[in-house]
Length: 186
Image (cartoon, rainbow, N blue to C red; front, side, top):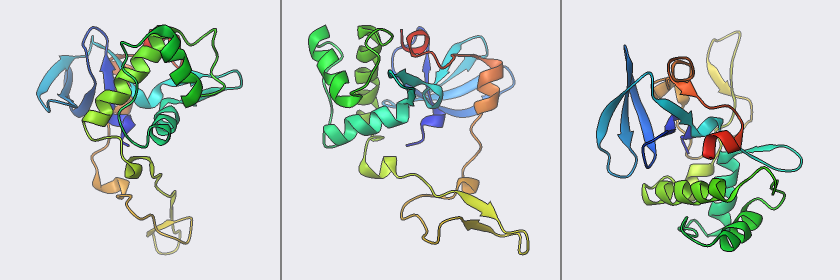
C-alpha cells in the first residue's frame, strides 16, 4: 500500500493521492473519483504514512492497523463509521487489541473505519497491498542494487521506477500533522 502518497486534508472529506508538486502547492487526486485538483501550501495536510495509533506500549503505524483490519475482515469492507460508539470500540479492540482507550477517541475510530472503507473502495486494500518490499543495498564493487535477502519479492516494484513522493516538501510546505493520533484524526 502506498500510504506515503495518500493524504487527508483538513476541511475536505475523503482521501487524496499526491500526484505532483507545484511551485505554490500540490496536484492531488481523489482516491475514489480519480478527479484531480490543486491545493495551496497553506492547506493542512496529513500524510497517512505519518499517522500512528496509540497503544499502551507504543505508537502503531496506521499501515499496520489497516493490515490488522484487512486480515480480520478477510480484505472486505469493515464497520461503518456511523456505527454506535460501543460497536466502534469493539471494532477497535479487535483491530488493535492493546489500543490506549484514554488517548484514542471515538472520533479517531470513526475516521479509521471511514478511511479504511475509502481505501477499500478505491482498491488499495488487497493481500498484495501489505507485502513489504525487501530492503535494497548498493554493491560497493559493482554499483548494482541488490536485495539484502536472497529471495526477490514477488510483487514489489522497484522504488526507483516511481517518482519520488513530495514527502519532505509536504512537511515543510504544508502544515503536516505530528505523530499524535488525537491531533491528526480528531
